[in-house]
Length: 396
Image (tube, rainbow, N blue to C red; front, side, top):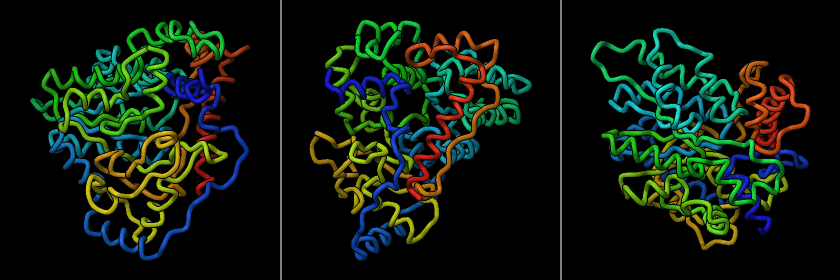
């Protein structure tokens, strides 16, 4: 398999041990291009007219579309906290379900029990995150479950409960003995017994809609949130290995539901092999330059208008593909702040314990780490967040 397909195969598997985003490469400040002042002022003026408060914009999108994908970078504190604060607004407007890729679809009964309990069972909630990915011990994601429980604990009799719909895939990494195993289609099928993660997300969303659900906010990674935009790297890797359907989760749902589905992206670093650190500014920093003219959280449609026609000229999303315009990537965009202001999530203390260590070792996403220990794995989880923090510092 060519190197680029190996990397994408690892990305789709959620494998971190080979560092596909370059977290451990030498540090340097991310390049930000210079822009014509008149161009920045034009786009800033457009944003003053078209921009809305992020929560109000997202509510309008949920009113218009039965399914809205919200794409996150992952492990960025401000992004998860935005969704945490948004949950009560959703509920007030009658949107009573959040799709979450960080808990498993097969654990839906357990998710429902946690959210319906008389007291919040933090141990059970932590277990839901652990079962999805043994390295996902981050406090802000745990707080999403707590926020949903708080809504249900305080609701009036007869009011509909708020639900979190599990979207994550079931995995069995015990079959992985080496990096080469992640290039073996027969092993990948054993690692993902219910299908690739994007397929599992799509199937769970479609089941929810078929059961009469509407106004579902699907909170997942940026790439999985693409509906109209095609991640050609991923499609090529899946096709080459013949291991699943050639589409991200959003693509697969869009194929079934069409314009009933929308994508909204949270402002995030973009993967870019042209940067030594593996990440770059979206549109080479143009959005951050525009934001600085009126620095307040803002959301707006990028389907039409001057933002829609902005060319995407670099980064993994266009490497080797056709000419791409910003408006092809999503329906809407949310800037909670400039990339320079973002921080990484906090780790959950003692996420790995003596009781779950053997499972953590067996389900480690990659070859079993030698001489794994409770403290070693907890430190590793912390180091992943610290590496995100270090990458974000490169935008300052």
